[in-house]
Length: 109
Image (cartoon, rainbow, N blue to C red; front, side, top):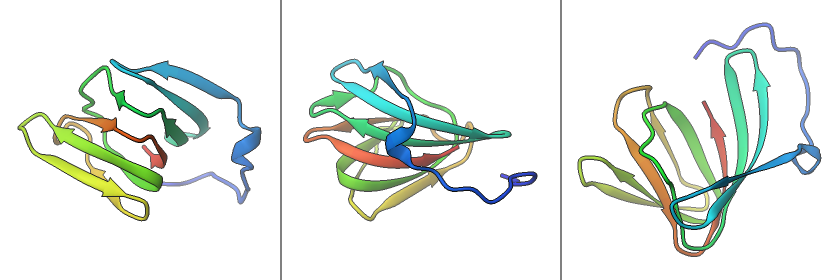
């Protein structure tokens, strides 16, 4: 990821318009900002959330509140709690998220 032509700025995430994305179960609320090819998201997962697809996009993800389980298509699963993160490259390992109690995440991709 190369970051260029982005002047200093701040974001009040509460003022970013939310969009709702349904999961296989539950939903996710995204607040999204784009800076050239970089997408920043503050994402809130409802309790009992399960993503409706396997994702091949690369991310850097930080759990701010709650917990998520990141499932990989090879059967491995990783539980992340507040203060923990993961990173994965584009097309590296397909993954999807689930959250039993709900969670709030910050995602860069």
